[in-house]
Length: 166
Image 1 (spheres, helix red, strand yellow):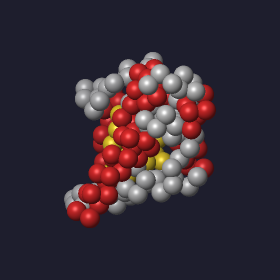
Image 2: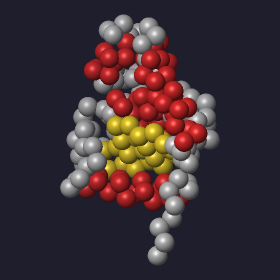
Image 3: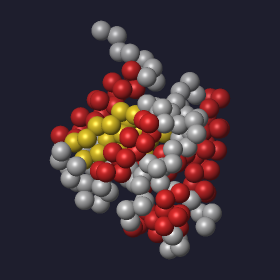
Image 4: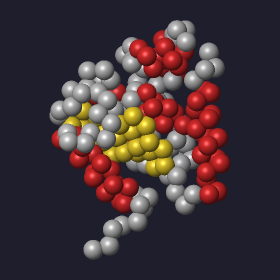
């Protein structure tokens, strides 16, 4: 099916539209949105992923697979559309966070992404947190909420954000 290409192309078209109007361009996605962000971030300046669905080969997040393939997923399609296994050309530095307690999207997908992408020369910062369920969002009030500060520091370190003056 051609379905996975449609949302990716929409994000890439938006990035092409914004590129001449922006100093820096980043993509952020959580859960299934992390799958889309990881699939569409080529040519941007930064990628931020929170508990992303990036490896579909383990059976994946059933709703994401259903939405992507309209019930017509094959093992080959799942493997081909797993960003953790197949980094796109031109991916930017990536900040990635996940909790070890996530029962819906296993942390191993994020670990695999960090391993594979790093081996391909993509700068990846992986932050793992011991506690927290799937779907934390910004994780306000949770120990994993420290991802926001860590991400801000990381964005400064890659010159995406200006360094705060003292």
